Image (cartoon, rainbow, N blue to C red; front, side, top):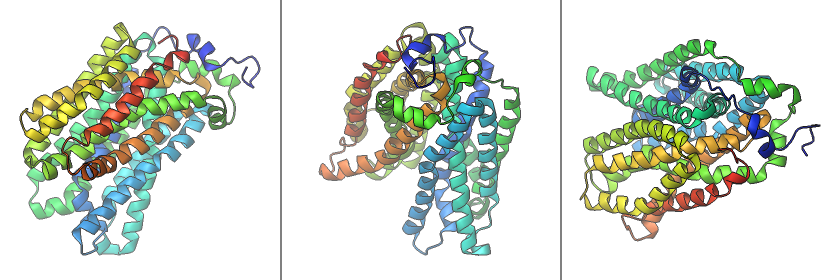
Length: 435
């Protein structure tokens, strides 16, 4: 029995946690818009990293300057768990809707300010410090966005939870696709020197203004009905309750998120550099392949989510993890030998991701009861991505070096996390019997 009088543990409560009627898909889209801004920012920073390094880290050495830029990028990424916990704490106390508005406002203001920040050449070290602080603030705000959307979807989607989660990730992918489009447009429109000076600034301002559009549309969101039902019996320290009473759920959640983080890191960070620098694909061919992969994921994550609603979300996740376990090495072998089209390989990669990404969210959210769901999701999601998405490129590179440059070696990072996630999925039913 929980220390709250008359409140049962999560497994006994989940029968009545969701609104059986479901809500309009439009509401889920509004809740998911922060994921689009996150996907936009994630890819944009990488695309313009060389320009940002020249503006704020002019060390005289291009490699050192670029390394500093990616260190700042990582700082924003690793502050996300802190931001997620703070946002989630208040989200479990005052409600999901208010935190949705605050987090979007923080991210939008920080993104615009980054685009308008004077360069090192203009104001010296103050520009560098200011840019770093803005990146940290931006990461802090992003920490509550996707976790909040997952929580809201779990409490609002009813029987269409798989579809809702697919829409959530599909919109995030759409943000990355839009970032790539903005990059191509600006690079084509502006001469090389002007592109270096202003393209990244314009792109950041566009992202921030887009955030304000999303913020304006979110004013129509109502509070989660599930939260309204339990708010009178909540604890004032949701994080303490999660860490005290839900340790097995945390382990299962991090195990499932491991494959999602690894998958994302390969698609968005590792494979572009690996294909060009190690396997000697052209830049244009690589960009097209990654674009197909992101688009494929955006499409299949929605389709697989809807299919999982009609069949089984748990078995959809297991099928995706199994496909990654069995398919990672053949995929890397095909990449290394140049025997299969990148388009075909990235479409298959999108299908595998569609299975796992659309299904794990439903299981993640249902591991925690409504009164601490936002906190549990934010903690596990942000910590899991910080560890697995943040460290996968390093681990894959180390495997490549330690294996004597075996070109298929990076595949074993994905195989390992897919096996862990697959095993964890067989224990989830103990805490989510109604999925």
